[in-house]
Image 1 (cartoon, rainbow, N blue to C red):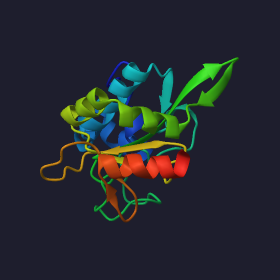
Image 2 (spheres, helix red, strand yellow):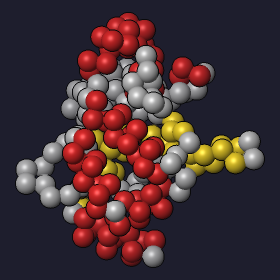
Image 3 (cartoon, helix red, strand yellow):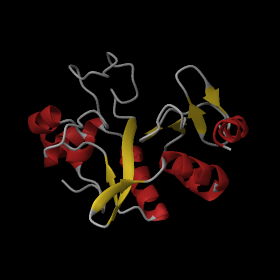
Length: 175
């Protein structure tokens, strides 16, 4: 089922779940803020494609949206992916017939400069991104809100970075 101009239900639901519940009922488990924000970023940055789950096309990615029991990264219902509130994706373009991925750090740097993009992401219901040094080949977005949050929060395994803290960390790590 087509969810947005560029995203299908098979890309955000795992294969077994999609086959069991179908697109209409299966999508009840997925927060639309996730894929609507991905579509907004596709449109804003002009990306040709994103990869989320790839099982529909014979690929192996199956845990990039909703995660279910039996998945390697399922966290017994406690993870944001486990309840449909997170999504991972990789933006790319085609050049000379080859798939090329956009450098994730460049996307993070651009987001740090563009208040209006971050504001729109939050308006769509996405409040956090994983830091670039942990997610080097993909972008992780999720819908966990922190009370009185003024901007996107950037998260690592053990720390939450405010916008200012993250900007400083990016400059120190990447120049």
